[in-house]
Image (cartoon, rainbow, N blue to C red; front, side, top):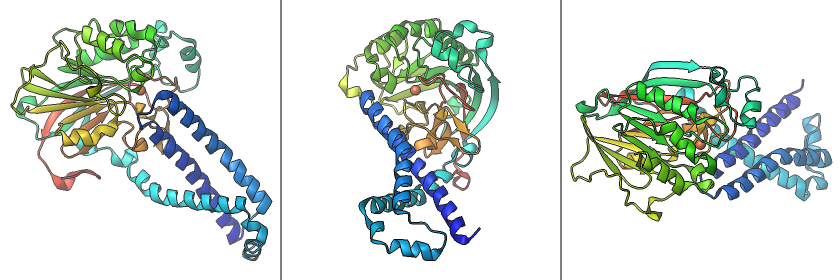
Amino acid sequence: MSSIVWLRLLLIFLLAVGHVSLWIWLFNRINALGLQRATIKRLEKMVVLLCLLLPFVFLFVEWRYGLWGNSWQQVWDRIQEPQFYRRGSIATLIYFGAVLAFLAWTAPRWLAHRPAFAVAKKRYHLVHRRLEPRLHKQNPHWVMGAKTRYSLALPGNEILSLETNIKRLFIEQLDKAFEGMKVGHISDIHLMGQISPDFTRYCADWVVSNGAEVLVLSGDLVDDARAIKHLESAFAHLPSDLPKVFVLGNHDRAYGLVEPARDTMVGMGWLDAGARDWQIHSTRGAIQILGSELPWLDRHTYSTSNPIAGVATSSRPKMILGVSHSPDRFPWAKLRDCHLLLCGHTHGGQIRVPGIGPIISPSWHGSRFASGVFYEYPTVMHVSRGVSGTHPLRWRCPPEASVLELASRPSEPSTLPVGSKK
Ligand SMILES: [Fe+2]
């Protein structure tokens, strides 16, 4: 093949990748803005429609005012034809230029933040990992809705598989008293009557039975008013002396379930970190709990007079635990000197393409913080893949229940991962 054909193929490839990347970039950011769900859904539809339609528009323009020929001379001749400069052609060229510029801008960052490179591997050690596939085979009653039943027929769908793991996290300036402390973390349980709350209960029970000294649930609790009672099915049996902390997520707001979800959780003895900061007094010492539900819910908009009392003290706590639904609150946690930040929201991307990883991830950082352990001084952030979701498809991205075991580690700037600050 001649050089012009190779160049044409390369350009088509780059334009296709750039075009799809640009609209996925927009899709992820739209979902990070804290807009009302109806607005987000409208914008999402627009993005998907434009992403699908624009290539056909360009094909038409190419066919109508075709730039390409079979030789450099033909290309040059066509550029000089007056009809080439009609509006459609110029607009196409401007868009193609923008797509290529976008690709040049994002590709290096995207590659640098692939999970294979960006996860702070030196900040954690995987102590235990077990995948329990297709748990509904042993627990058929967990499948409650038709949507779940049909989607489980899709090959490789992992919505009712579960990865249980214990991760030893190396925490910056960890006080000796907190060495070995175990923090249980589950997220995004999305109760809506499609999957039995017994699945969530199973996840919580695994975390508690593996020594969690505090249990954290980082948002997206319910998607249907009828599922509020499922919160009690999932959590009411948990030990009353186990500190349990939650924040709400975008789905709790989207379905107007903020108040009933809060009331139910607080009624079961959970600490509402979305409403106010807390201080837990454990045998290890005081643990400061900070919560953030931004950008969806702002604690200043509702009462902070929660009857489940933490005790305010003036002494600086030796352990500061941040809880946020979105990993986009990482800068907030660093600013507040959190030792550890626990998040969810991104579901690990739900679909992980071999060699590429997650693509759709509702975050201002796209798929960068889709799931895993991340570190930027002085905060270690754990982003859970969550337990469930409204889209009943997970591929190479099973639900996750984690126990995070805290360990000290001296500061070693030379060994800090990419993106870390000192
Ligand atoms: Fe979620």
